[in-house]
Image 1: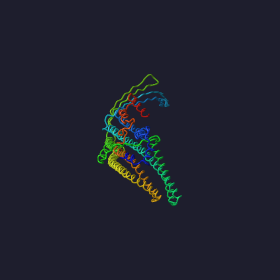
Image 2: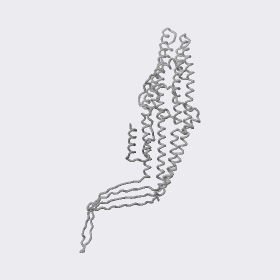
Image 3: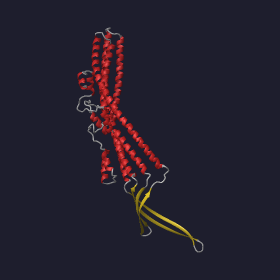
Image 4: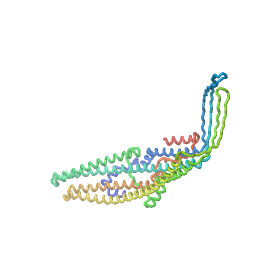
Length: 472
């Protein structure tokens, strides 16, 4: 409906703006191109991807505690002793020894049972990874929505500048006409002064609009990674769910903030059980092998030991009890955060749909306003040539038309932003859902290589290749 209206009605100012701001050229940058560039350019996404990889490593760290621990140590020592003892006549006689020894020891330790405390730590690390993935998804939505807003705001600001420039030309024409009519005595000096004042105001508004455009361009550069050149008009908007209850239902299932809060509740619950298990004893298997070599003689001593060790805390100053209470408090806090997040997600969906409905209503209203203001402006200008209207009437009618055209351009921009805000509120503002032409980041690729805590091996070499690819 908007495209038909522009083609049919806005043959003057609005059409000129459309041609000036959004030239139909083959190399114009589309919204999809801009969003793809923002996805690949964003340092915020890179930062959170790195944080996710760090969370992945927590799984490897937790898993390592369930595996055997091997250590080695070596020592070279020299021992000098001096002893004094009385002889038969009561004199003290000194005797000394000087020995040198080298030893090498290998120790092994394996946790056999600890009431599940270590396994719970591994489970908590896995849930934390899932929460971190959802946090990355939320950041991706923020980046893409900000890029969309930057794209639309550049177009909005450029259209406003074009409208202000056209307004300045029209006011300049009215000023020349007022001066000509003043020369022949048709109007007074007051009419000329009114036109001059309106021209000065038009120049000030144009300067302000140009400043808004420069700020919008800087925001575009920061988000997209380059200065906007030619931006293609947005001709098609994505489909959204208009039913508020259905949209909220989808959001509560798919929004990354909601799923992250759910995973954080799981982590908190696991940590409660983990804190309780930390108060219980554990069973470890320990062993060691050592060889001591006497450097002063061709002899050595081999020693081996294996032991089953039982032990547990008795009293640690109340630390373990405090940690258990702290874990329960954090679990309650995580549930409270989940409750808050649920309401926030639902509210954001409602707000976004309300903004979209308002934008659609504004478009429809401003369309009618433009039609009426254009007819009024043309009529007032014709009547002014016949002496039935003053210069002030003409300037006022022209300003009303300008205001209507500006409001229409802003409403179209608001509708575009509101549409994508609905997607973001539902958790669908993602590169995958928007089908952007980018290399999608797979959060599971790195995790699958480190979840078994690889050392430097074939799997470790694969991990190095993944890291190099991420670096590029």
